[in-house]
Image (cartoon, rainbow, N blue to C red; front, side):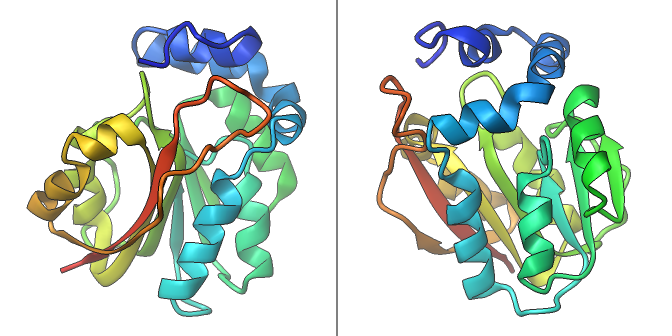
Length: 206
């Protein structure tokens, strides 16, 4: 388990119990989050962008940034010619930072793992960086993500290695996603020495 092994805001986030406490932890971190993660060499957003660009056609719309945080992905998705990006996150503080960037068509305060207020087949692609991890979101969120993803649309996710090895791809298949690519395990924050490796993966909606 990763909980309690980190210092500062990161340690607080991983030690949080339940969605409300996780949200409050991110609210308190929002204004310095990007600076802190850049210092740690945070890789998930760039890895996810590369995988999305490989498997989701240029101009596909809309794209959902599921767990958008402060909007790191939203800024770059526009640069890669995805013209309509929406984001959701549990933290009001993180969403406030993302909203100031002006790169999202809509932002929603929502929790993955619960029923989402979107119609079936709403999104051409979904990307979720740094969300499927200790104390955050588990495989129970996959069913709703499959429901709102279009047929032949893609889901790009990062998954902590223990969750991945515990059958994540099989759970995704049960939800309706076929695995099409997965990276070797990598450390998401090289500057944070106690980080458990993750896998980044691409699934296509059957």
